[in-house]
Amino acid sequence: MLAQGTYASVPLAALTSKRVDRFDCLAAALDEINEGAVFLNGDAQLIWHNRAFDKLLVENREGHLLVVALIESVASFYQELFDSSRHAVESSVRDVTVGRIEHEVHFTLMPAGMLGEESYVLCLVKRSASRWSSYEEHLRQTWGLTEREAQVAVECLKGNKNLEIAGRLRISVETVNKHLDKVYQKANVRGRAELASRLLDAAL
Image 1 (cartoon, rainbow, N blue to C red):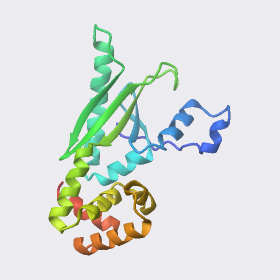
Image 2 (cartoon, one colour; image 1 turned 45 degrees about the vertical axis):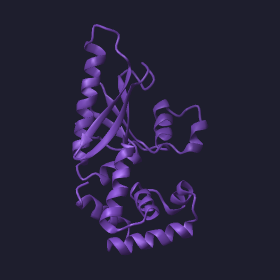
Image 3 (cartoon, rainbow, N blue to C red; image 1 turned 90 degrees about the vertical axis):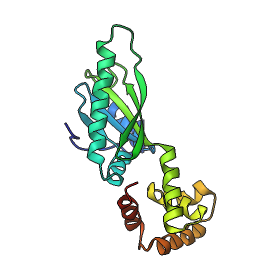
Image 4 (cartoon, one colour; image 1 turned 120 degrees about the vertical axis):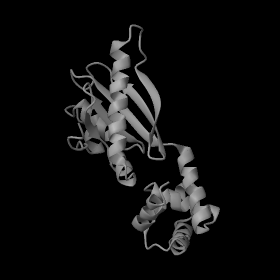
């Protein structure tokens, strides 16, 4: 029931070719978004997921439970689509909680024939924004970080690189580096991986 391998995305430059399959085009486009993107077939089997979803699983030590929750949710979504006597809506939004982390999942039934004869559901998965606020609060209270240091730490945990963090927070890369150095000192860690591990061990 689990993934049968990550689909190899087509380079963006190749999208101009008329021979590129529509699934390849869609897969390449989905790899450019921040949300975890997942395709499940009519049997609710996970058949493809993008890099953002891979990272989401790595960051979540109960990632296998997230996969199970997605499969169960899509099975329920299909049930509503095809077993209801009324006209069912072909998209919905649900909250999926794994451990103490909330995820917002958007389900959409792909148009008939778009990806082939089989039916597919596209799921976009993202953490609840309020959860990141909880991370910031936890970091401030536990490690005595300033508000800006906590913001930088959380952006780091989201997988954003220093240049991206600088752009999001509208500060210089040098300032990002200084804040990260302070975060590492206060948390008594040596880098991003250790920082993420400490936060996960805190059972947030």
